[in-house]
Image (cartoon, rainbow, N blue to C red; front, side, top):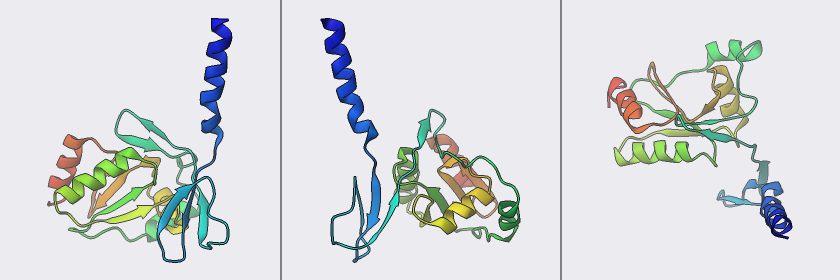
Length: 161
């Protein structure tokens, strides 16, 4: 009896995992999340892809593990941020990305967020720079993969902040 009860509980907990999450932007440009956009409200939608956070401060993004062909050519053409500028490639559901952006904000450092989950151009840039997981933070010739406080501080120092 106990085994059956545990099985039923496990199945009940698994139901929400199958629900899709959609990010949409309404007519006023506000970003919303849910299982579907409101009927008749307009706006654009983009399904969120699954990501996996790992212990080294990075969230892996499926399908983002190679740079070849047109992406390699694009990589040479992508302008990198200048010294003093900060670009951070993110996804909406990445906790490490939020920590990195909070860290930048706490330090008073302005940055450009490039959400690869909703912008195809940012996603192409991310692939072109060899991104496999988020956050990837760039400033001048400096790059930080993932977010760990001490390593991020070292990145900022090397970038001149």
